[in-house]
Length: 238
Image 1: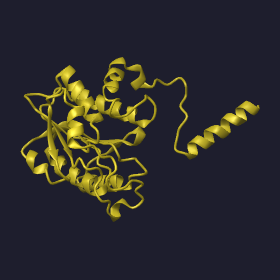
Image 2 (image 1 turned 60 degrees about the horizontal axis):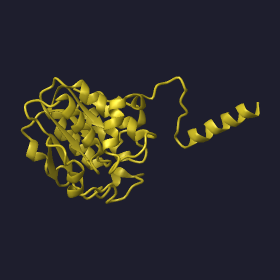
Image 3 (image 1 turned 45 degrees about the vertical axis):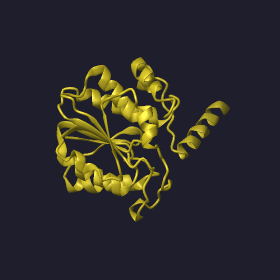
Image 4 (image 1 turned 90 degrees about the vertical axis):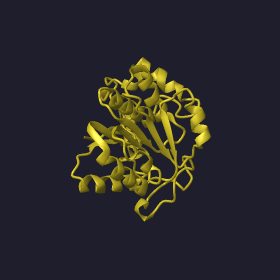
């Protein structure tokens, strides 16, 4: 009886901190996938460490989406690179499964100076200007084994014009703040091909309210459907 009471109190406590206890009869798919775990380890020396928490789950969703668009003929993009962890996941799966067609590239957009200055639309933000910084040289060294990248250094959206003639089948947006999320969506939505995805890393992150606000505004304006995912992500299917 005391044991059950203690377990109930513990569950309530961790729920108050935003954690959810899972039933033991559910598969934790990223941990059951030996290839993914092998690829995940390739970025551990510079990126996310350990097989716990939401990040490995988010990267596994990214893996699932890019594998599902193998037959689509268009470029990929990532807005917000940090140290290059998700970029490596994309590149390694592309290398193994030839996901990109006709010499298309993965276009990486980042200031490589960390977060920009938050605006009033980011009210409630728990991060600061300059957080999540990975320099261009650092990221290029982390991804040196891959030839599928084109780097576009600058504050979003200043470098988007460099790919304005491209179409895209996959775009990963992980820029945290209202203005760059909105600018990224407004640029890429008209350039997405049928069957493609935009994956939003920050949509359901309470610490990043501007990402949620910007996405909802653009989705409503364009009459699109957003699919909400566990662990803070969401995607738009075209």
